[in-house]
Length: 202
Image 1: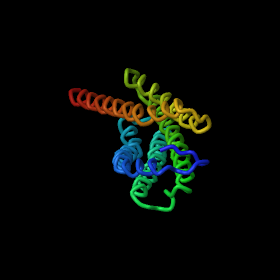
Image 2: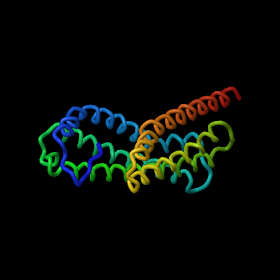
Image 3: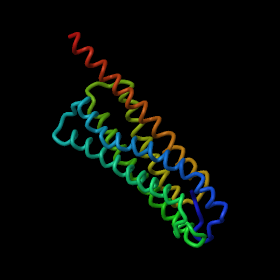
């Protein structure tokens, strides 16, 4: 969805946007559900880990909520844009479309980059709060570093207009992050189940 603000949008590009509007809406609808889950994830993590300290638990909850809400802002904006792509809005005219798409890309890029950093800090705090080390803790630390790297990639792709860098940031955010989050959450739930079973046996 990139555009050059210096050049008008070609009729063929406008047609491609209209054709892809449904995919944008469906994709960002899924991201909306995922980001809402991330916003609530801190409560589950704190319940599972029972972190010590007065502020660590609330910090984890707030940071995950902040991360999820920043992601939700991106999702809502993109779903609204997808609906706009279906119309004959003046924003998508040959004169204004490129500037509109550049502004949309920039805003979503920065919000996405910003959403990864509080999640990374919350994930790192979760790893430090665990009472026992193990595979999940190691994976949690790696996940935190990955989120920081993804946020930096997203920001760098804005300053350095190279297609390869932008593609790397897109793959890291759209494919890598959901995979990391899914594995991380399933692993956490499995460990929670194992802990509960051990307590019942004891």
